[in-house]
Image 1 (tube, rainbow, N blue to C red):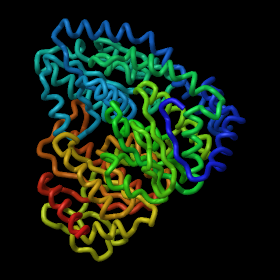
Image 2 (image 1 turned 90 degrees about the horizontal axis):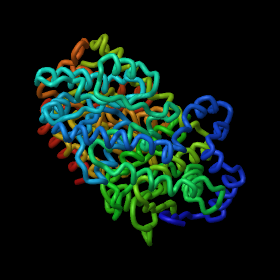
Image 3 (image 1 turned 90 degrees about the vertical axis):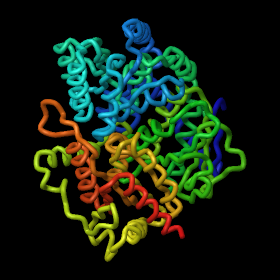
Image 4 (image 1 turned 45 degrees about the vertical axis):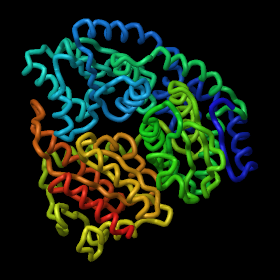
Length: 540
């Protein structure tokens, strides 16, 4: 089977699941856009979300226009592409460009330092792509406003430097046309954000940056017939069966490591696709993206974990569960394969893969805090340990009086086969070393540990955190802002928005009965070092 290698402990059980999927013609029905696959309750939503199956061919018409605009911009000396987008609108272009080795600046944050860094780029050479299905996403609307003002302050007409990707008929299309922005690309409205890699949302920013988007579509189109076949050798059917059978055995975590694949950063894209699509009704697959195949959580994976190699074959590297897979394909084929796999997994475990019922709750809570920040954005810490304020209820940290004790208490609150989610509402560039806490905490906790920068993760794993298996504990890290930026024509700054998003997410997690420990860094660098020291103390 081209590009896919599987390992599973019970061939009979696996073969039965494959047989059931083939008999129900799940693969061909998905490829034909059959909205009835996931049952009556999901049908109305699925009917509006299956356009992705045809994107390898329908998106081809976009390519000449994108490349023509790139040539126009280059002729004007504009060769730096900045993308403002969240979730599926930013993750796919990031993987495409990283794999192609072409630069693109991704702004999927409200951290004022990271936003300031992006705006501080040479604006005389910059085009801003703003990607949003409706235009109402608070992060991207704020980015657009801030960049437009910065362009004007630099003597540049923002109308010549802003390119919009949105759905036809959206308020954002109307705004873009009213403002007279340089170009407006309309995406297929029947494609959800996390399935939009091969739509205008993935192709426009990547193509403007110089990636081979025609080749990307060609690779996907060549692989598409394989994925539509009701055949026991269909790789999407086999991977879907693997994850479905594993999930039925409470092996609900997929630990992802890149090996020798030329594809860069694929785990982050796959993380949002699987977590947001399947993490609901107390079910779902939790992706755990690790640093490499030798990272904690991969080499020592428990029976709750399936291993996924992005690259070379499994060989003798089998987890305790026995479930493993290796996938080695070109990026366009990878996108198409995993979208089909995700749709099949939704069918197998009994969830609608196209809705995200718990994502909006964190947005609502954040908006409420922006309007009345005294309701929870600023609270007194339980105690302070060096440069770190410790915020948590006694139910979470008990009588802890040190940072190490609080971390130990949070870990103790997790189930034996639960997970620890580290959520860093920090600067993904300036505070990048925060990600080094993931492997340390994985070793200290002995459970699967994820890491995400906020608010980026709210548009991906945030759905799983509230709607998936209720066995997670949450370490939220926030920090003092070195400076702040006003959002033009809005009654808040980026710093206030970031704080409200963190507080809103924590509030919703607590409302769902999830243990949350928030560590606020009075000094970011010193605070992260202090947390690292405390975690290392747990390992001593």
